[in-house]
Every structure is written in structure tokens, then in C-alpha cells.
Length: 308
Figure 1 (cartoon, rainbow, N blue to C red):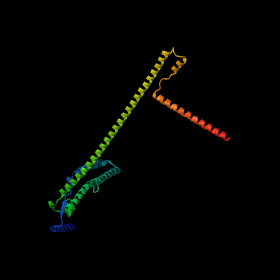
Figure 2: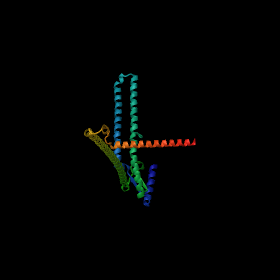
Figure 3: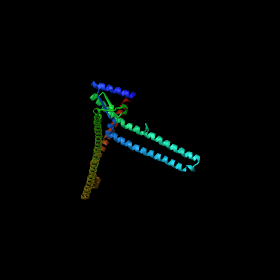
Figure 4: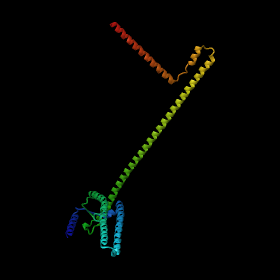
């Protein structure tokens, strides 16, 4: 009675306000909106698949209980009182499990109800956001949810239905989110491709550097071999030249000249010549230091003699 009276007074207030041109009213049909949203229908379909599995489990448990009861009825005359009581308690235990399972899955606070609410919540948020934007843009004063049975709406003018407007706004917002997500994925993909390209360039540069290093080592090794071959060839030519002179002038040379010619060393290589000069410089430096040391000692000796 109070509900009817409240609705009557509220309706009269709306009509009075509308007559004075001060109130803008509209309504949405949440059930209609949910049916039109693909993501909600897909999630609901997945939930229904779970519910079918739960129902199959209920049927299986129920069949097991019925079989136990039937078997007990057939064996009842053969069982002792204690065994009969034990089987009856087992059936009651199974029935209790079945009831708890049904409540856990399909009860008021069960998995099906809670998961469905979780599915509806994001969609409701989208609808509320769209309604808030529409209220701000079109300056509505009141917007009802037609699917809410507590309102007790008997008649509603289709002209006041803004459900399709809400769907368009949700679709537009969803499109923006999808485009943003695609842009984000493209950015990640480009970054990954750039990273892969950079890695390929780095690998290619490392490979080229390795090839250049191997080529340089090979060239140095070839030059070294050529230099050694040239040095060996020069030594052999020098030896042949010296041997030829000995054979040509051997009878005309004195024993001292012959010995000196035999002991004559072949021409030095650049490395040997460099080492020889370095050794000579070191010997010359040592001689100079030794001479300075002797002069210093002599000077000190003379000074000491003068003092005495």
C-alpha cells in the first residue's frame, strides 16, 4: 500500500513538473542493453557452460543417491539393524553433500549468481558512465531502469527510451578503447621489431668485425711468411756469394784473408739490424756512465788529497 502511494505521489510530481517544462525524463532498459553487448553475451555463454557442468555434477550425485536408496530397499530384509542404520546415514550424508553443492553453485550467494554479477558490473559501469555523459549533454533530470522490477512501471512511452543512445555511446567508447589497445599493441610490436632489427644489425656488425679481424690476421701472417722467405733467400744468396768468392779466390788469398772471408757474416735483416743498434747504444751508454763514475771518483780522490 505504501509502495503504491509513493508511486502515485511520485508520478503526480513528475507529471506536474513536466507540465511546467522543468523536468526531463528518460529511461533505459538494462536487459536490452546487455543483450546487445557482444562481450557480455560471450562471458555469459562461458558462465552457462560452467553451469551445465555443475548441473551435470548435480545429476550425477542425485543418481548415485537414488541408486543407493533403490539398492537399500532391495537388500533391506537381509540387513541387520546396525547395518541398515549405517547405510541410511550414508545416504543422508550424500544428500547433505548434494544440498551443499547446489547452494554453493546455484544458491543466492553461489558461484553462478556472484560470477554473473561480476559480469554485469563492468557493463553497468559503462552504462552509468554513458548516462552521466548524456545527462550532462542533454540535461536530463531523471533516468529510470525499466528492467528494475522494484519501480513497478506499468507503462513507458517508447519516445523516452534512450537505451539505443546509450548503446551507441558505449559502442563509441568501446571503439576508442579498442583503437587505443590496437595502437598500444602496434607500438609494442614495432618496438619488438626494432629491437630485433637492432639485434640483427649488431650481430651483423660483430660478424663483419670478426671477418675483418680474421682477414687482417691472415694478411699479417702472409706478410710475415713472405718476409721470412725473403730473409732466408738473402741469407742463402749471401752464403752462395761468399762460397763463390772462396772458390774463385781461394788460391790467391792468404790464410788470414781466407779466414776473414769465411767468418764474414751475411747481411743483417731489418729486425736484426735494429736489435744490433739497440745493443750498441746500450753499450755506449754503459761506457759513458762508467767513464763519468771514474771521473767522479777521481775528482773526489783529488779533493780528499788536497784536504789532507
